[in-house]
Length: 150
Image (tube, rainbow, N blue to C red; front, side, top):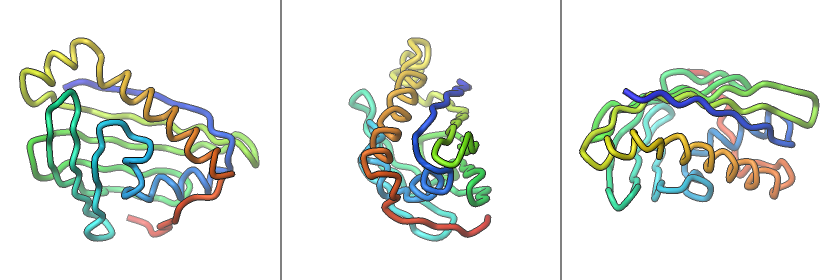
């Protein structure tokens, strides 16, 4: 199992960063390789990804969600085995540190080679940079919000 930890500072309030992160269906706008996410219930999502020419579909369950603090999820069905948590840390009224931790189990030969070449780490770094650009370009206004607790 590969572990990835990355963080980035975004120039938006913690509530804006958190609210945007709860809008899973917008992830394809800033996450490379994510083709589609459907939020099926408050805690279940269906993902379609295509990374390095390998297309995967899987279900993920939100296992913990605390407004303005954290969102955790784990896969429950499909070819992909991963778990992750995103935490949000208020730096000041207008800046937030977003930290992402993921455990990824490479599934096939392509994923195992990619893991050894640190492809996932580079992907996460790029995704966080694109998230920063996405939310800052919107002036800190999220595309929506879900502020429930899980």
